[in-house]
Image: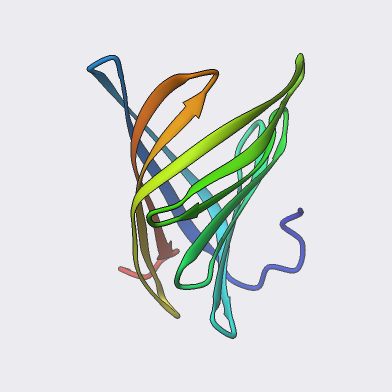
Length: 141
């Protein structure tokens, strides 16, 4: 995954509230990226210091592919449990996602994807409430 041949510029903000053992923490990240719509699929691509992330949404299923220090290909679909291989520098493990909610408001200008899911990692449960926002750069100027 690369950021080559992007003829559009968007601000991608990912905000995730994660709750572990009743304690919550929110992490937010903002990156420059691209956003395109082809057919019925929405493609969001952004890069941070450790990885390139591709978000692909078809109206029912969300795939988040990460390639960098940590590699993963996570699939989310409301009401489903999915498994993914999570590859880290010190080894591989299988993680599971149980998606309770997945909704999106996306059009040619951007929008958002909201997802609530439980990450099951080595029998530990991590509850997540994530929002991915896509805004055309300079849209409000």
